[in-house]
Image 1 (cartoon, one colour):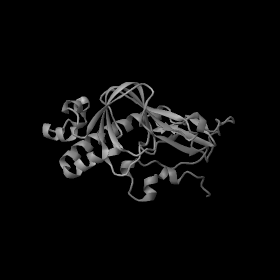
Image 2 (cartoon, rainbow, N blue to C red):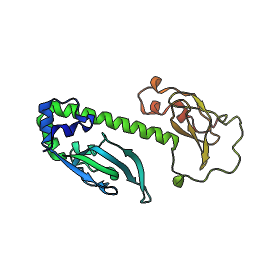
Image 3 (cartoon, rainbow, N blue to C red):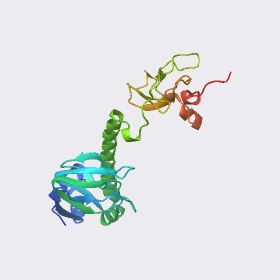
Image 4 (cartoon, one colour):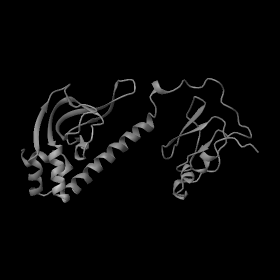
Length: 241
């Protein structure tokens, strides 16, 4: 058990009253970790939820070539290891200490048992975790828009001239399938033009010199599988007429 005040190091339990905080505090311990120590191993059983009281940690994942890639860096007040609130989960990333850390650790199995017995606590905490997760994903999406591809996985850029406008070309300008903003390709690799929408940031592709039909914004599309692709994708091959 830990003092209730230790749970106030982040806003995960802000919606709980003192009695509820006392129940959660019974499940906690405090850990001190030095620089270079690993808190979570990628692929290990999700056995605990962590709250960073002091210090900094790095979130890393293994790339396809076996190297660890830095995904994020977290400071005081951050939460990680939230897979522990779900049954039979594995940690998706490794956590390494980059600055001497003080960490509040909550036993995952006992926390789930508490949630099952007190649904109102579970709802408030899981809602807070969902907010943290959404914020992290949004930040990661923004980073991927700026650096959408790792160079090691890209085919060398096309060195031959870009096809000129013809009756069967897309006029070197393609509308975003999400917001309809007209864009020009920002790179050509492997006979494919890669576009980044300057309005919404979406990444999309088109074979070099193909035709594209009119774009329908997502809000106006139907619900069928074909409609979900958008007219511009179904018309992305040359006509035979």
